[in-house]
Amino acid sequence: MEPYRIKVVEPIPITTRDYRERRYAEAGYNQFNLTADDVTIDLLSDSGTGALSAEQQAAGMRGDETYAGARSFFRFREVAEELTGFPHIFPVHQGRAAERILFSALLKPGQLSVGNTHFDTTRANVELVGAVVRDLPCPEAADLDSDAPFKGDIDLVALEAVLAGPEDVGLVLMTITNNGGGGQPVSMANLEAVSALCRRFGVPFFLDAARFAENAWLVTQREERYRDHSPRDVAKLAFRLADGCVVSLKKDGIVHIGGMLALADTELAKQCELLLIATEGFRTYGGLSGRDLDMCAQGLMEVTHPAYLKERADATAYLAQCAREAGVDSVTPTGVHAVYLNAGRLLPHIPSHQFTGHALASELYLAGGVRCAELGSLYLGEINESGELLTPAPFELVRLAIPRRVYTRSHLEYVAETLASIAKHPERVPGYRLTEAPAVLRPFRARLDQVR
Image (cartoon, rainbow, N blue to C red):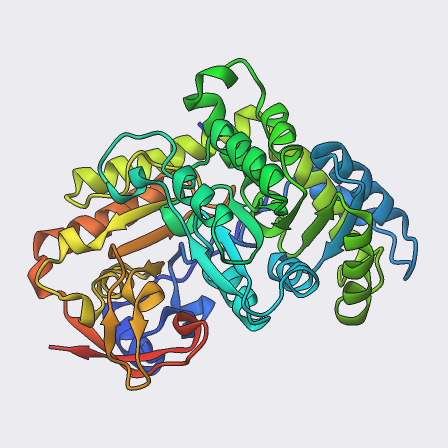
């Protein structure tokens, strides 16, 4: 059962299929263009969509809104330092701000940012400074159905070859958990090996630690050496392997807004601080209010509680099980923050150039008002200026991201029932074609039309 009870409730919209068909057409068949009133169950993102605890609300009331040197900052810094071990803590308004500041200070045009899998906004921030992304997922990640426990790992052989090669590597960035790779965890053994390689070749090593607590939980469940460790202890060990981290606290900070850049190197910290002040705010607030900082601090303490993490992992596994029983496969083993549906297997009649993953995500909305995100060729494929798919994504996936402490089991069962209704007649699901295709961050701004 959920290790909490519900104190405040919010009504959710119950709409008809006719209404959803009209609104989705008006939105250019892009779920990012829908409004909250159009959506019954919102699984588009787990970022900033969680429910605050009573203690977080209470902490917010203690927020100090002093411009410089607010008490809230020092409370936030104390918690963040204890967790990460880094001496330089900078609050920012969200994770992509931390990425922009770090990459602007550390990466040069033409340099490589190497990682297990860069997420879309991370990739964009690397490319905006003229650097180049190189993803090196481990071989196990290619098998969606295997029980390999750590498909989020980086390919260590490939990483060593890149580091030893002629290309200029600016940094190595490990995303925990690996969101773009199916929400799969990274093992401590892999992080230790990456850290050792980076030390050997003199390359900075950073964590994209938006879901650090969920990664730590899965390590305690799947990596024998750490079965007797607490999730917080594992998280601390992971942070101390790196030179710094970028964190969206809208995930494992369980807040609606907030992020963090944490660094070990003093000179790099000085460069980042100047960029922070110029673009985000003074170093002790970084674009956040005092109440936000206090709620972030409280969330960072709550998120590693084993009972909270166990229930969250159980809920995600339950949704994946219900989906499989409905006839819809997903990436295994299931992670924590999301279920990744295998749209390509369910809809073999829709070719990649008609965006198979997007087709399933669209049908989930049309059939039941469930909003979610495509992680297939619309997101990862190479597309020309005319909107034609040149190179498809390796897999056509749909991500059902579960907000923290928001939905009950019956909500998840409703999602599974909607999937079951689609799986009965998958051949009825249409494909889609692009009518507008932005060059950068395509899924957020694209417009499409149905192909019948």
